[in-house]
Length: 315
Image (cartoon, rainbow, N blue to C red; front, side, top):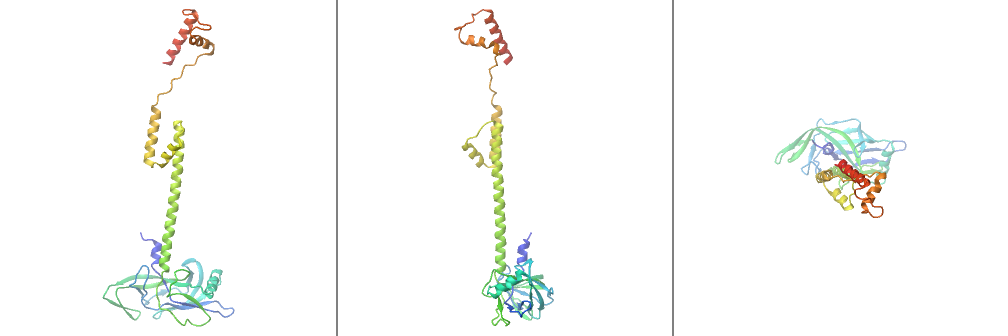
């Protein structure tokens, strides 16, 4: 499935120089210029050096047309009020009075090299091969070349990046640009595509970092739970080894540890001796010294019977 952002960037093209004359007192700031001269537009990041021609026959341009900043629909800075499509596209209009529009006008007056571009939506795309010719807008073109047919201009925009030697927006004091430049495309679209790719890579890296952080915390929790289950305390080296294992190796190791723990024989506990008979065992242990119980006595027989009963109960 094609990337919608990349698809959109394929149809963004810069325009030629735009005039921003000084306004009379109480009047809006205006702009005017030739958005398209009717010829070949070459050097586009997607369509290549062979060039593109926009067929002006039947072209549709909304009236009025939005003037945006950086192609963002939420950043409205002006309105294209008039368009002439007789062999070229001449546009003129007014800047809005909002803060963003006035900032751009002021920066233009101060000499900032803004650029202008437009988004053109072709109804069809015709590829003219090498050695063939085609007539568009009253001009003859040789292939290879790409022709946009049944076009619609969807927006005009002002950009602050990607300026090159062929395109700029300049402020003039009520006089025409004495040196209009030849129409050409610039690298604005390419730089925007590269910026979008960089943003996607950053988001991917952030997601991977979050995933690794989650996996590390889960492994720490699993090791702690295993210590509780096995009633043991792993050494620092053991914990490091378990942490660095991949998931399958750790799962196998934990399984083996559980099986080994379950197979260990339970510890044999010495039967508890009632306190009132403890002195009998003490006598036995002393070998008869210091209060020895004579063998064969009634007390000695009671002790032997108790010991036999304890051993029988332990079986």
